[in-house]
Image: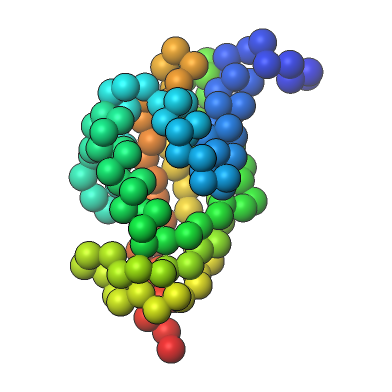
Length: 143
């Protein structure tokens, strides 16, 4: 099979990879450009937030507390290009304490994670993130 970007499945794969490439570059504007205005963002073990404004606020908090790079990214997409999933490994540094979590002291962590996406009109309409919070807490709490 030749992947040439003409199939919806190919375009959705490229969209998710572009989203993560922008994340890894710290290019939040490019990330936002890939999202719908009413994007639904399901936080790991948390509530759903809706809209770009909420997504921007989330990313600002994340950028204030963490420095992260995603590696070993694998993307899987439904044949119609409307659903996608990604698995990755987060390599991060916890540099500023986040509310309700252990104190930050520059701890590093490596954590597998994943996300599910809904794609609408060549943009991401939903991002649902998942990782093992207890594993992360154990890593940043170890002395």
